[in-house]
Amino acid sequence: MPETDAASTDSTSTTSTALACAAEVPVPEADAIAGRFPLTANPSPVAEDERQAVLAGLHFGDRFTDHMAHARWRQGEGWGDYGVIPYGNLSLSPATAVLHYGQEIFEGIKAYRHDDGSVWTFRPRYNAARLNASARRLALPELAEEDFVASLVDLVRADAAWVPSGEGESLYLRPFAFASEAFLGVRPSKVVDYYVIASPSGSYFTHGLEPISIWVTTEYHRAGRGGTGAAKTGGNYASSLLPQQEAYAQGCDQVCFLDDVSQKNLEELGGMNIMVVDADGTVRTPRLTGTILEGSTRSAIIRMLQDSGRRVVEDAISLEGLLADIESGRVREVFACGTAAVVVPLGHLKGKGFDARIEGNEVTRQVHDRLTSIQSGRAEDPYGWMYQLVPPRS
Image (tube, rainbow, N blue to C red; front, side, top):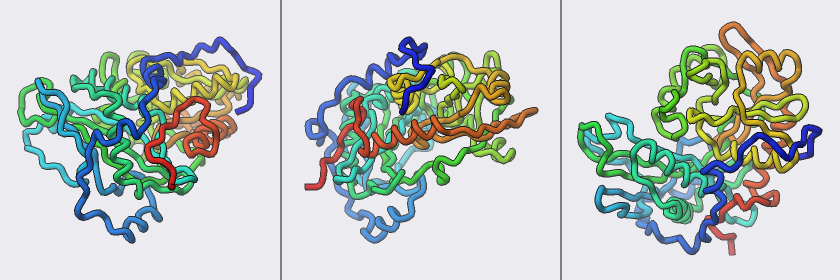
């Protein structure tokens, strides 16, 4: 990405969060941790012709591979029962705690096939650390970060044939953990199950970098101060579904939430962080307040922008101020970012009493192209973000 006139070496953005620092800790090479989740092969894998048909017509998150990783935690014993096992339905008691109290966390991370046949993932230690941060908030046990990465290694090696190779395609990995003890008391579960499932996926938004439309809700909030907004837990997403329906009813693709205190400042979309590009080249994004999920993609983009000489500011962004800046021309672009979508421009902000259009996408496209080129292996990775799960073809 080219430098900008707004270059600044004393950006107000913070890149030394606990998660960003955790992501910088080297992970042992895959061969050194492979086998921690021993494989029990699926006796009835998907037939080759059916798998090829799936890979030829990918959507997002609707088909799954032959295996899944699993581990179980028991109070007083710790984690055990590690394995990669056949993908299949779970058998749960109607009294399973997660069904009643929502004690659950998850992550999202992708595996990418490079031209030489190798398979890589992006900043896995970041996701490992965030899973544990979510676990602490939900009173769930933490999983050793290397074991988290090992679960990805062993699952992807078992199902490497499912990793697609087309433009914008990946194997989407969904690690998750939940309270699996059967009881109806309100307390942390004494038994917890961890799984990783995998889904070959195309682009999250089928129209690629075409701008999407956003409904800004003033009635609902994604999270409250002291709540679980900074954790990746299902309840946050469940509470976003009704306002997402509201967005659809208004002809919009996604919903954007405001903060619950002032009820004036942008926070995030239902599943993505938001960034604003000013006419002077400055990029602004809402400051992490404990109600916003700290995204790995967000973190990486901030680092890339700063290293290219662009000023990045993490601060409150009021809806009123943003609308005025769009009208005056001070704001040229707005985009959203996240693991599933990577980067997508926002072309239309709509809400009660306003309807604003944003035309620009130059910086958005630069960010998208740079990041996806690193992930796909088409460009050098100066940050050491990519981690090889499967070696090249011999």
